[in-house]
Image 1 (cartoon, rainbow, N blue to C red):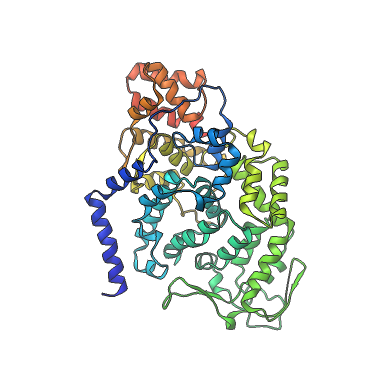
Image 2: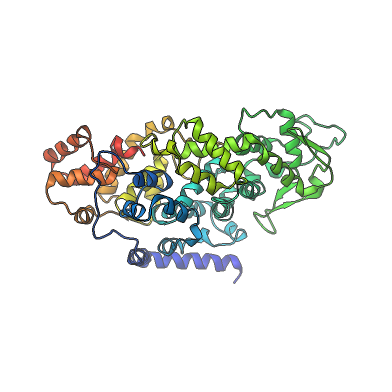
Length: 501
């Protein structure tokens, strides 16, 4: 049996086990390990969100029942410290749920033996399960952030086979560490080299021309996005000369398709090894593959890089148009720590600007879906129905076609509200394959009996504060008129209050 046959046999065996009820067994084991619905819950009674709830709405994909109490018990500072060291967090319950997903462990070259549609399906499932169930919530939030910042669209060429290892081996291990290390791993990854045509970048045939024209020079796509999106920002002062010189630094990298599929390697004969000048910094000749490191060192040391990365993080965590004060603080932290992502994020999460930004962001569809599943302590295997719902909302993971990644501002997502209502209704009515919720169990945990009080308490649990009369009254009226309490829960999930975080 060759390795392709062995891999296919393993995958088929996993599928057979799954159809025999493995999903139910894994779910039961995960819940038994402590990641289920607590016996008792305390619904918020204040008119405003607590600091703990606000933190979980930003640094996590919303709270799992009981998370707010945990943060209040250990304190915000300690919770952030815990999240900044994800390897020390026991995440076995989530690992049980993702263990049988091939893209989580199959070597990069063997992924080429799987069908692209199977890889994408598994990758979406893995991403959703981690977002819903992982206790390493800040890491998963940042994985999503960096996948947009360093976007690779799965539909382009070999990216259909490379995206899984890009997420697994490049983004996730570096999401909270050194930005320079993350940038280096991304820049020379097979996925990015394919997506931005870096594998087609080779030295000009006219070596005597200092900066060849585009027709005779290196491919500049990768270099342009490296400067514009990944490091400096579009208005940071670089020009076309800098783009072309950066492209020369990046020349010579290829991606194997035959002997070691997906492996990125450097071919000296394709590299322009002459002297280069980028943003006023001279890079001496003769450094070969190290030209990439020299280039990235120049870029990361620029103050514009600190500001660009800090602003993107502040936009993600604070608001669509973050105050300049928090951008400056985050940028200073980035510089002071040598570009340490975790410490920069800590500065943002503990900032007064974040504390004042309650409900100033609209959830993107992925966050809406995941936060709903978490709030209801859902049992989900994240099958096709969940991914299809995200696709209808325009937020299918890994599908944004351009290098800028999915937009991170409210205006881009306001047209998805009808699809959100459809998902909420399907969720509470049990029409999503492989996903179930138990509202009666949640009601029992919240210890409510009176019908009106139950509605208000559930609403408070979902949005993290006591609902206002104008938010609650339409839901109560709907229940009184239709007697459809299940649909009332869907109304709460689709309400403007639940869409904001």
